[in-house]
Image 1 (cartoon, rainbow over the protein chains, first blue to last red):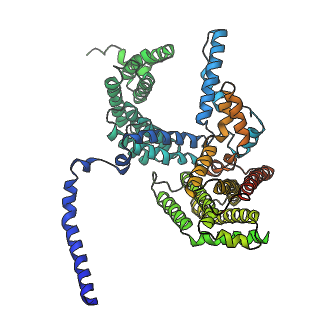
Image 2 (image 1 turned 135 degrees about the vertical axis):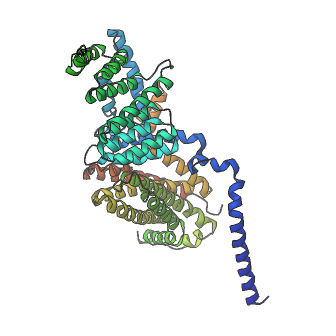
Length: 298
Length: 259
């Protein structure tokens, strides 16, 4: 075979390969069948195992928020062990449980005193100060891990609400926060947490009371649908939804509705006496007095 | 000393002739650049995740270069029988051990410099700050840690018969120390005797390579480590490196080469 014939054969083969690929490509998409619906590359590669990584990256965001000062697995085991011992001793002495602030203090000083000179020396090369990322928008550093966590496990609702909070409240990125919450809502249409956070965004950032009310009312319905039947419903979330709705109605002048939400709130609030006082104040407000007054004779 | 340096030069030449370093560097650069170009909530000032991933890749790459380069030095010389003409010259077995280890350490140092220059360019341009002193400190400490790893792999190369087994064991030991070495004291305190004493002894005996892992300080823009502490860490690494090299020499000087 001459050089020219070889070159022509090569060109012919190349043309045939190109033609075949253009003919096959649209058909190949049909061959995938249900696999075409399989989702992202991470989903295909990791399957349900991606949830484990999602938790890791969510924790990573928390590590970043604390500027790297975070207990390792070993420190956590030590704290649990010491906590159990201290708890047992304390309960035996006073029969009372530990208060949360005390636990927080312990958690902040998880390193404790160095056990030996090697430990003391090693600490020179570690982060040993507890600081938070709260200056000059440094909170943004936690966002990549939250985004990655959401991609790995779209059903982890907390990821969306936490990321949206930092985006809208600290970084002023309201459109991004709303977009991320709506992404979370598409993945979790029955989540009252995401709806509540979206309502906060509409009320606090967009100043759109009407849409905020609608979203919070939807959050309340979703809470009743998903949480009410549970043995241990998330009452804290219900507390926040009802508080927000009551405040919004009071601000908008709908005192009767505000009282209605406050009465519901009283049943779940850890401080019903405070809510009762607020209800009394609302009942004594001029607008409510005007509503209660008898209609003038015609 | 000149003999050892001459041997070291050959090892450095081998590093830039082989493709290992280039492959690892290109891989690190490509992954970092791709991740750096990702859009995270339209915020182009986010940099710490990029630092974390780039430093992780640098650590993995430098360990691969250090261990694989060191582990194959003496077995390769013995396999190709070039060890005989080498020792026929006025070169002692001690020179071979010292020269090979020095060459591997200097070669990993050169590789580290290239990696850190890339790291500094990528992160500083994005962050708008140039914490060169901190990066130099991180590079220095990592290089000191690699001296211990090179010493360990040199000892392994005269103890184990195959390069692959030496490299695997070195990787397992180094990663094990990096992950749990610093927590052995915590674990020891929660164990009953005699496990507690055994773990504590192990804790004091192993080289604490995790001291040299200051990635968190770099990532979270923490203050510089004190000069005296760096010096002590350097001495600590030097002592362990010397221990491994002397042990390697003691084994190698009585080892038959023809096997």
